[in-house]
Image (cartoon, rainbow, N blue to C red; front, side, top):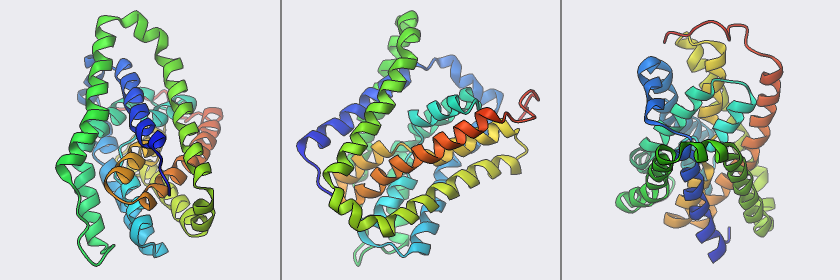
Length: 294
């Protein structure tokens, strides 16, 4: 993978812009959902950092990936969910309020969980002859700057100018998702030869990782007795990652090769996410109208 100055500047900048937009869609009162349905919110946000890392572990073991590509799969599995998952939940007519809470909590947990998971998983899998060294302080600072600060500023704008925030929230979100997708396509096009070389091995790994995430997310909700609508939300939230963050972390602290899984995962998650959203939107859950107490 090759990253020029344009990508190295635009990826984190656009991520910060997207997080600002996410903040504009939030109110302090939104977090009451955590108290109203603690089981759903905690399973979706905390469980996110258990289920997707587990999927990453299984994928690396089953496919035999090594080096930077294996590390990239782990980084993808350690990312929080992002605005894309909220948009897909909206299109799927799933529980959007729950999706927003899960995305927000997993994003806020990310500065702590991501470095820990990458370090633990990388060393547990023995990806190199020497220990995988994760610069905790630097990674935490990067994630804090491009996530926590923009979200806080967005919430501030929402509190001071709610009409303005309401008016631009949806078009802002759609534009952000499309722009990020465009950036991913640009990065892959620039590294097309590398993409073609690695896709026979990395493609099945990414498909498997995303598929495991979708299944674990859905059936973990079923195990805890949540409604089908909430299980669909969990499925999307667990399996749709903030891969822009993953690519930014990979190219900042590790090798360019480790950013490739994030780029490919970005494209594939749109395929599965939009396909599921279309199917679920046309086939509402029978228990949609049943109040969920958990």
